[in-house]
Image (cartoon, rainbow, N blue to C red; front, side, top):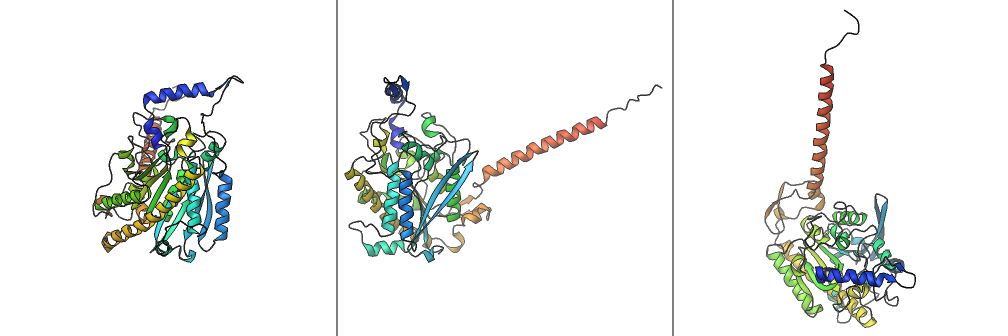
Length: 434
């Protein structure tokens, strides 16, 4: 996600970075400037798959376990720019994949191209879910009891086009294939720029959901209706809950209980080294147009998180690969094992939290499905915290757009009508002499 990088880069350090960049980008051998930003540490191919081999390994894994795993590839394009995304669905018994009593989990990895370690974690988790790999100290009975209650959708590499740019040598690239930060392209507080706004790092795109990648993720969310969302990044170690665009967490006792759950997770699996709280309140800067804020505020996902799984605070500011990815075997394996265990523990804790929320929700207070919400099923509802609120936020942007088009069309029609009347009311001048 680059939160640590954005926090460290003050105005003065940005100036130093630019000077260093210009100095190191000039090659005395040929007298030409290297247009890609420099990085000391290259990708360790003994540790990291390239994007094609990673997806091939996941595909083979799915093929070996068709009773548990299902894979599909979706695509979208906008103004000549096309992107594809692979989605892997896990269910302990695939025949129960549409069971509405199960809790639904949506996990996204690799939203930023340079954060290669996140997609490796996706592969690791899928291998554990398929029982090809196992973690020590994991009770198989408790794990099976948890997984029986879940349907999990995994997006192993959300930003495939941006990842390709990284593999071609631009190890600092976090954006997609046409220079848009996918974690600034969502609609909640989209486009707002703070004083420390970095146009290279945080380009939000031409409009909310202008990018095929975010369009596909939004469509996936609205069709799947997850109870749990986790956006996985690297750059630091953190367990974030909403909000990113403001320095606060949601009100209410459910939010407090979720924070306690994250603090317990921090103690058990981060050795109390992870930052816990809202993204906007914990990192020192606000982020606008993020996926997690959309999932929580608009899609009404009860438990929406951003997990930051690794960051090297000793790395040089221009050593991007080392800053966002472990570079030795020991750390690499430790990160994958610890965070796989953290995810499985989170699944278990979250189901208990959701059970509690479900038991406290009466029939009249149940969450409206996303489909009904999209169709304006109610003008008002009791939300998951028992407070009344207007259910008009989702789609207001589209309504405003259609209204502007209607007004513009009406003005044009009125202008044409008045022009025609003006012409018809002119006096008729005879061409014949009197």
